[in-house]
Figure 1 (spheres, rainbow over the protein chains, first blue to last red):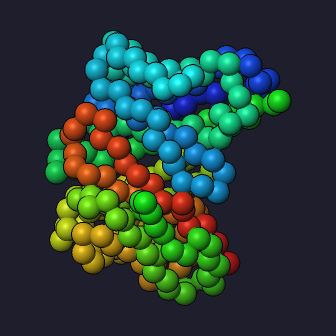
Figure 2: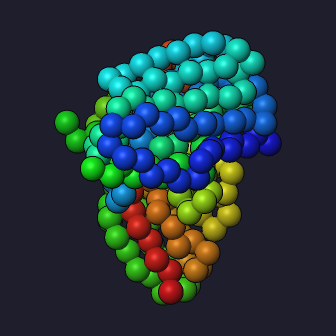
Length: 114
Length: 115
């Protein structure tokens, strides 16, 4: 079965600093999702990557999927306290069924210190 | 715009008790899902419903049952709660599958404690 690993497990950065979160798959990814979760709240969709080498940006957050489609990185530029939360990567399994189930990594907890 | 609504938000059960978690979406989505989230393990899929009238097992279905009551509602039932089912449960929905930027919308979560 496909597994997703995320690193680091937790991150504490000072406001204004850049940071990167990584997501690695044991198998080729079909679709890679990034979500953000604030404590006690639901998940907020950030972006989805499908093609090798694809890169997408939303405000100060940029996500990339490598050419081999087994690793994705999430980069935050000039972090702000509003970026704090748990970042989860999710991936569609490669098996073509009526629904390609999405599995999630363990999450990366981000704290931003003012 | 309510999106995905889960009830209750918090619940404490005694071992052996039963309960149903309710989920409803108002986005006319075809697919709905139930996940559980545990520390260090991320989200794991319990059951999903690709479309109205169909349900399938996910990664961790044991101890749970689901009902896709109609297109809007997808409930998760614990027949005999166990401490191992202490978790945060999330319901999600998505429009269709295999489309670019297919986005799943999540509810706020239900924090369940089984004592």
